Each structure stands twice: as C-alpha cells, then as structure tokens.
Length: 640
Image (cartoon, rainbow, N blue to C red; front, side, top):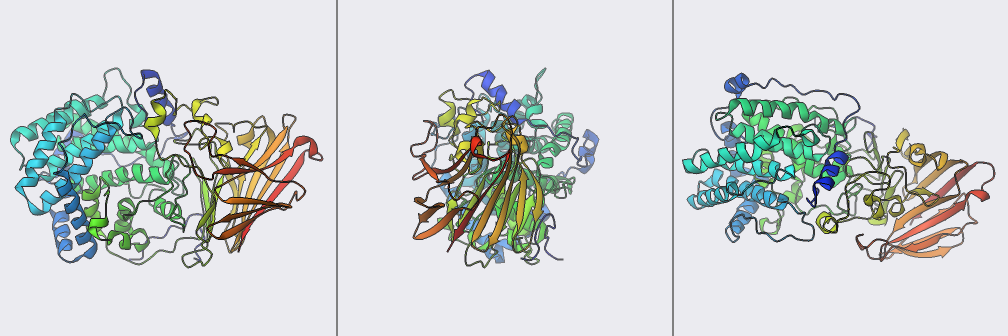
C-alpha cells in the first residue's frame, strides 16, 4: 500500500459571551454560512431498528472496542510512540488528583468567555486522561476519581445550552467516562450520567419551538463540536432511549456535511490552522466513534476535501515554526505532536502526517496535552507506516477562503515560505484580508499577519460586538480584522467590501510558481477592477504585482506591508533588518515614490493586541497621478 498523496492543485516534484440575547444570536447568524448548494450527503441508515441491529452491544464502544483495545495493549508493549504518549498521559492524570473536583467556581481568565466552555473542556481533558489510565490499569483510585468528577458535573444546574459548544464538549466527556469504565462505576452514577446526557445534553439540542440549525446544519466548527458531542451522548444512551438517540444520530449525519463541505474542493479549512485543529479534531473523533460503535464512518474519511486537509495543515506551518495565522488563528504551533494530524496518518500510512519526533519528547516535558489525548492514543496505536508522501512546494486550494503556498521544500537552505489568500470578511472567523500574505526567508517572518491570542473574553466583556459581520460592525475596528492590518491593498482609506470575495483565477506550479487573485469584488464601488499576482521569482525573492483599473470613485490607492522588522528607507524602496539578516523591498514600477512607515505599536484600538515593533509600510498612489485609468504596482521582496 502506497502512502496517500493528494494530487489536487499541487506540484509533485518536490464564541460568544452571553452578555445579552441579541449579541448571542448575532454570533449564530454570522457563523451560520449555509452552502449555496446542497452538499454531498453521508450514508445515513440510522433508525431505532438500525441501532438495535448494528450498534455494538458491549462496552467500550466509543473510539475503543474489544478489538481496537487489544491492538492498543499490544502496541503498549513494544511501540515507543504509544509507550511515550501513554507515559505522558499517566503523568498528567496524576496531576488531576492535585486539583479540586470540577466545579462552576473557576475564575475567568482574560481569554475566558462568560460561559462554561472552559469548564467543559477541562472535564473532557480529565476524562481522557483518567479514562485511558483506568482502561489500561483498572486502578480503583482512578475509578473513584472518575466517579466523583462525573457526579459533580452531572449535578451542575445546566451544561449551558445557550452556548451549545459547552454542551457538546461536556456530553463527550460524560459519555466517554461511562463508556470507558464499562459498567464499573456505581449503577447510581451510570443512571445519573445517562439521565444527564438526555436531560442536559440531547433534549436541549431539540428546543421546543427553538432553532438548532445554527450549529446542527451550520458550516462552522460549532457543527463539528456540537454534533460530535451529540453522537457520543446518543450512543451512550441508545438502549435507554433508542428513538431519541436515533433521531439525534440521524440529524448529525445529515448536518455534519455542511461543515465537511467547507473543506472542499482541495482541503482548505476556511477558519485557518488553529480552527482546523479544533473543528477537525471533533470530526475525526466522531469518525472514530462511528467506526468503533458501528464498524463504519458512514463516508467521513472519503468526504471530498477532508483527507486533503492534512496537506493544508502541514503547509500552514512555516520553517520558523510559526503558523500562517489567517482568520482568527494563533501564530505559534504547540510543542507536542499533532494528534489530529496523526489520525490522517493512521488512515493513510503517510509518515509525513505522523510527527514522531514530537511524540517522543520526554513525557515529563510533554506539558499541556490535548484534551483528546486519551482518544488520540487509540489512533496512534493504529498507525502503520506505509512511506512518506511528498509535500508539494507549490499548492493552491480553493473554497470559501482560498489560499496558496510556495515553499523551498524540505531541504531548502533559504527556508523560503510564502502563504497568500483570497476570501472575504463574512467567512467563518474571517477578516478583511483578501490579497494578504505572509513571507519568510532564512526562518525569519518578514511579512506577518497580526495575531490576537484568542482573547475573546477580554474583548466581549467590554460590550464590543466581536462577531457581527455587517459592513460597519465593530469587528472591523480591530487591526487584525480589518484590511489596514494586513499586507494587501486599501482604496480611499476605506474598509474592504465585507462580502466581496477575492478568488484565484490562475495558478502555475514549477520552479517559479505563480498565483493570481481577482480582487475586483473586494473593491466594489472603489475600483473598476483589481488583480494581484504573486510570483516566486527566485529561491530568495517574491514579486507582488497589482494591476488596477480606476473608477470615478477612486481617489487613493495604498499598497501595504505589515512587519516587525527594523525599516531603513532607501531610494526606490526600503531595507528590512531583523535577527542579523536583511530583506530588500524594491518598488519596481514606481521607483520615484517613497515608502511611508506607520507605527502600529501602540495599535490604533485599545482592544488590539500589542505586538512589539509592529509597523505598516505604505506606498501611496493618488488617483490624479495615474495616466489614464490603469496602473500596475510591482514590488519585489528579495533576500540574501
């Protein structure tokens, strides 16, 4: 069996805090971007009779079952990765005993939202750690702690259905706890857990006269998380209430396709690298639960674009270790191995998706394990290497938020990295960043995308409407959300058109790859037309070429580049210096123009993230200086 290697557009040669009801509803409206055409369906035979015939009767059956567990225990005796990760799980499971039982009195941190999401996530982390250790060692002490945690969580007044992510993650935690203990908990605890899964989990997902479509059939990560939680809960209570379980599972299989369709056609996750890890982790977990409980994933792995997204995830991490952090993504990847990516490795045999060295760091240094660590250990044990797939050095992925990458390949001495994108502000977690890009050379990020560290709670508690997507909404006041904080074009000092999507209209692979965007919709009412072409001219240079046709409304065109480097202005451009290296910025088309340097530290808005040394380089072209109504802006970035 050869390792899976995608062949799409590539070069083979190488949540809202509940401050009030209205903002909360706005979140759902803005994050529920429905597909313009009906997405491809998954197999969906679910009914009460199907459950009776096909659902595995014995426990465990969530991610684990008798056969899968036998293989896991076999690997624990000889596989160094499985042994090492399990050792880390044991260490962190011991740490749970040093913490108070799960409770609602956890003080809010700066990043925390005014909901129970962090509490649900902590519960899921604890059940993954403790549940796996109990599954392997059957330690009564561990069983008792699981019991106490489950009783505590099930006695919460609610699991916070107003913010249904909280319910989704809590349901998964409770379902795993009773499944992996397989009848060893007191019957009173099992009864309490199943009753809670129904009354505080599944039934609130079917509000009388209410609407669950914002997540059940939406296109954002809410769909993946909430449906995943409902799948776990429904399997856990299937014998107790088969009709409720069946209709909930049936809804999940019908609804999940709206999120899976977002990966199409080439694997780009529109919400960026961080949310790929979040949303996709729940999708792969759901597929694993279906396989263990029913013997099939109902078509999830082969859903168009889903498997290809592993390549997108690989390409999102630059040689510097920084992520291409478009949308609301973080800029730094975690130190530990990527468990979600490892699932794709287990399904394809592709060692490129299996971060073996990171899985083998000393267990005591593997801090902050994912709350999916226990379930992930299962598919780590299922991985069988079939070879390494070659990651393309030039790749373009279309979809709701299209991106393109140029790299120098695995052994590139220049550590070349480019990531550029189209898209529009109204995509899930989207920004006004069509035409923007990041650029690295020698492992230094010269052109960056400002980050926000996910401090949603801090922002929301001020009353700021972070999630509205209208043209004049609060979101676009923030530097990393609007076009003035991105390396793109701005016209008349105005915001980009929020629903104006920039799309790739040309892509060429090869030693000097090119990617061309049509940005005309981005500037509706500001320009007649605009295209942006990125070219890897050499192993150490990038050309950015903008062809612009002015309209009667055009007054000023501003070319922008965002950097942290020290800037030294020279005739016809600038020299950027950082970490003992330098990058030349050459204005090829307008050498007579001077670059302006605008300090962004401190940033324009008090809620912006402060980034040391951040600045915006500008090339300003007044419309009255353009002969006729067309102009071309060419800028070359070149290094040593």
